[in-house]
Amino acid sequence: MAHDIVIRNGLIVDGSGAAPRIGDLAIAGGRIAAVGDVADRGAREIDAGGTWVTPGFIDPHTHLDAQLCWDPAAEPTNRHGVTTVIFGLCGFGIAPCPEAGDEYLLRSLEVVEEIPYESTRRGVPFGWRSWREYRDHIASQPLGVNTAGFVPHSALRYFAMGDRARTEVANDEDMARMLDELRDALDAGAVGFATSRGPNHVDGFREPVPSRLASGDEIAGLVKACAGRIWQINVETKFGRDATALIEEVEQYADWTRAADARLTWTPFYAEPGDTVWKEVLAHNQQLNESGVSVSPQITAVPITLLLRFDEGGFLLAIPGWGEALRGFFSLSDAEKKQRLADPEVRTAMKVLDVDPKSPLHPDFDYWTFTVVPSRPEIGGQSLTDVARADGVHPIDLLCDQVIADDLKTLIDIPIFNRSREGAVRFLEDPYTLLGLGDSGAHVMSVTNYRYPTFLLAEVVRGGELALELAVNRMTQVPARMHGLTDRGALEPGLAADVCVIDPERIALGPVEVRYDLPGNSPRLFQPGVGFHAVFVNGVQTIADDEPLGAAPGKMLRAV
Image 1: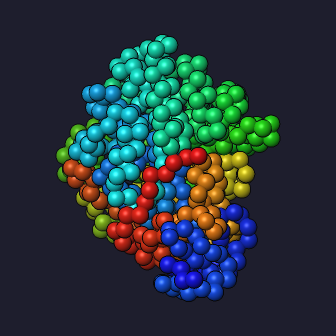
Image 2: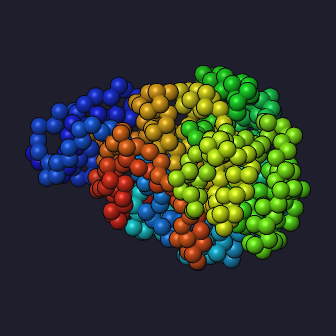
Image 3: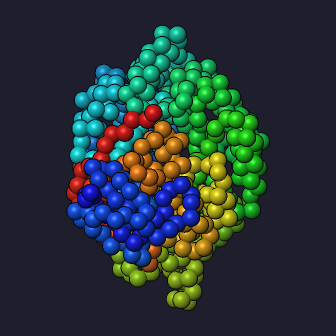
């Protein structure tokens, strides 16, 4: 019997964690028909010799809720081998939405997730009230990837309570409305419920988002409705570097999870150099899982970075020692900014590094790297230390001279969290963590964490720090099972044909660029992956040699 497609002679990495093996993979009717030695011919034959053949990757932590309304291809996440994205994390989203509630939800996304209001106002149609109706809208789009979603708590609370969600504890009637909507969304296929206690999460009024006003009883009641499903929380103690406080907080959430017979993933979990917090929390998490409750701290393979920029306001003045030297910088004209950076006294003040080296914004030029360098693109990806040494200058003088030469358009990548490579690898090896934190769709001019699948394969696997089969398992079968997406995540006959064919010699991160392609021509950072020979979504090819083909075979998935 002929198949639609047969991919031949690739190194099959099936997603289960089993050792890779050379073999063939057949696709028919959008599903995997056979894996191994396929005798039957395909209507199309692909020679995959020398490549890795893997399941499509699943990104379990995106904020693509709004972007999917105007970009159902999910660029550039789709360029990193991702075939399924999950949205609605941390309690933020655009559904459910009460009458006239769209302004509040969009302004909240602008502040907490750095998604420009100018873009969401133009790009999100809001033809829905319930999560189910939003789901139907997304399902009707020409999707280039599969999608699935959480029910976001802050939106749910605002849907049930209106403006009272920003100031009040929910009463019995409010709770009943939330539960009715949550249960309907779960019945419509939502993967679970997501919330936040994160102290940095504020709305458009710069006040705590609604989920932070919820009582413990309210959250526990919503978790109880998620029996057999997953729920996610952004934790309150995430910046405290206090293992005891974090463990105590997670213990409470684990109790709610156990009582509900649900699964929990909490965010974010980072590893810092010279810090024991992550080791203590990881050991405690193993104990929790061995006690019979499913708890998965969410981790990432990449250092969490921010983009330092000089052309408009950001965190430049928060760099220790720079606030005074550059006081009033963003109120100056471009010419005045360049004049300030050329001032020898300003540079001398910027060179004083009397700060805690553990501070996330500590100027560590060994790790600060040039990302966008218009007048000198050849130094992109190199550290300030290395370039300064080659040029025979101090890194501060190099930086200031380069920003002037680039007419303030230089972008510098600064790792601020998850800076321990040892910890990142330990997290990936641990059976009770969840790889994610990609944040695709959010922080559009400050982070490119969505690049983690390519980074993991190109840097960690090829560097010999993690086995290929384990890396693939962490990006496929593990998130599929955790989120109830049981028909994909592995290369097995009968499962959906979400497949990547990857060239291990070419796999790499592409260059970062600034694109003005959001609605209203707002800018965003754009970083593609390189080395993706072919990507298939439900048996239809969507990527060919790193370039999207414009196909739209994606589906809105239902959790089971």
